[in-house]
Length: 376
Image 1 (spheres, rainbow, N blue to C red):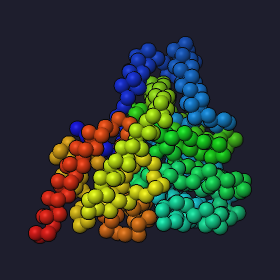
Image 2: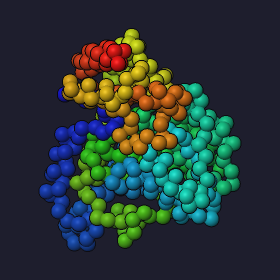
Image 3: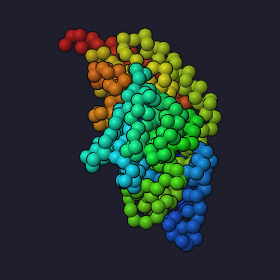
Image 4: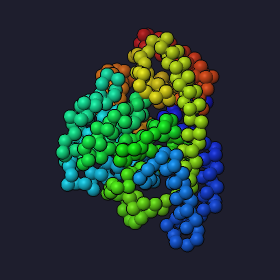
């Protein structure tokens, strides 16, 4: 099997899985209980949270554990909007966002919120001049992901946050799901940050919202305090401890991992450039993601052809509903390229042999499917 869909989800690290199993067996108490077993479980959670905070250098921030990034995105956006109803009903975002952001904003639009999509340049980068023009006294939130999940475009987050800092009534949320474990993150001056453990070789079912401590938000789930007052429910020591372990391991030898992925990316793009396809990735995406489009071949057809050779890629973001958050269409302005796009996402676990086998299968299937189309 050759797995090239790491941006959708990563395989769990064996050490992380071992931690999950060990904690589940050893720490059986409810962390909300005040007896010894509960206190021990809570201490483990606190220690794990400190480890995450130390790794990410989270000064003056707290972690709200969620079921994943989709819940974290909902909590960030609705939490701000519902808490600060008197401050404004204007939100700024991009058309490159994950569907959990786009759909949340469409819901808020029905409640009377105004949503503006900031202009992007030809490379898919946020137009900083347009961003500042869009901010008004009514702007309550700007939500822009650090890296788009479909094209892998890295946004100029440092410049964006410098603009937003000028407007104290406006909060800045960034979905950094595709950044965690792949690059060093500067969390300073970002009010709310979403992440998911499954993107850095942790377990599915846990993510989080990192929030500036001075900001109060409205919870989505009510019913009492958990690890924080912002998300009720019994916290899982095993999931939280394994997330801390996964994050630590992801950042171990990061520069070596980045170098390997960059080398694989350059080789892959170089070989794909020899074929009769479109390469949608430009110089701005992270090396982990390569996005291409086929000519007159449905992406699903190619996906299943590769699947026959036990090679796995994706057509669009796994959670995409195919609506407004179509990154390829947004950047290329080409509907056909959007319909035939494929995302190949690699990792430090990917080998050159994996890439060569993918290229062989892809080239053969491209030739075969192209001939079929000509004969139809």
